[in-house]
Length: 196
Image 1 (tube, rainbow, N blue to C red):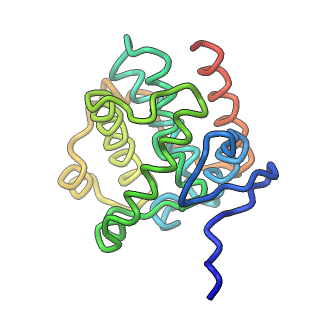
Image 2: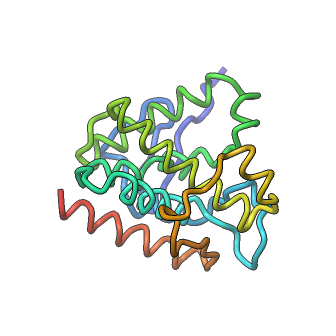
């Protein structure tokens, strides 16, 4: 019996082994392209375009920077890349992740480590930083829930917590073509890398 294929060909030409990913097979253009076409909320959002993981990642990095203004650039890059493995494994909403079990988490961790090493970050982010990024991620989800995912304010407050309006002042969810999100993600990644 032949072994099932566990790799994916990327647009860059790289062959990414999902079971044993290596940093040399990771390219930011592949990540940005993939994330720009992966819909958050399983695509159940208002608007003419899906709200992509690329857009979400940009928002999380902005929120993380507002929440941790003295954080080093490498942790801002980690915030931008917090969902990067989804460029190949997709975005599963939390209830689906819970139903799938530990296999998803293990795959996510392997891909995250390879991505981090590729871009000069430690394979594993310190717990304190990871928690700070998770807080920014939760604030992003709260904004998304009410602005584009059909949640009422009270329902979003109950599930995701109340918003700190000082933190989120001037921020709104942008729904735009995937290529625009891809290009902004790639540009932001380059800016952060150059500052490291």
